[in-house]
Amino acid sequence: YMYVEDLVDQILLVVNYHQDKSGLYNVCNWMPISLKEMILKVVRLMKASEDLLRFGEIPMRTGQQMIISGINTKFVSTFNPKILTSAD
Image (tube, rainbow, N blue to C red):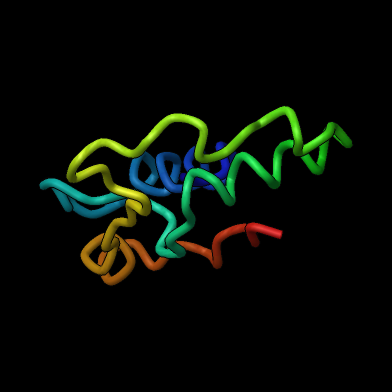
């Protein structure tokens, strides 16, 4: 997950880059965060009750990923983006 402002900044960085750097790039936030952590952050920002979420009520599926993160080394070394927005 990443902030939309960071995504837009990274897309604009590529669009406005003045050298030929075609290829595939992983545009991502390098800081892994679980879906549960992200949902809890949103609920707290909304000042809603965490009791409404009822985590664990539905059992996990076999092989279900709890954290998904990307590696953006190629993008960072090519385009040198600004520091990404903090998750806090």
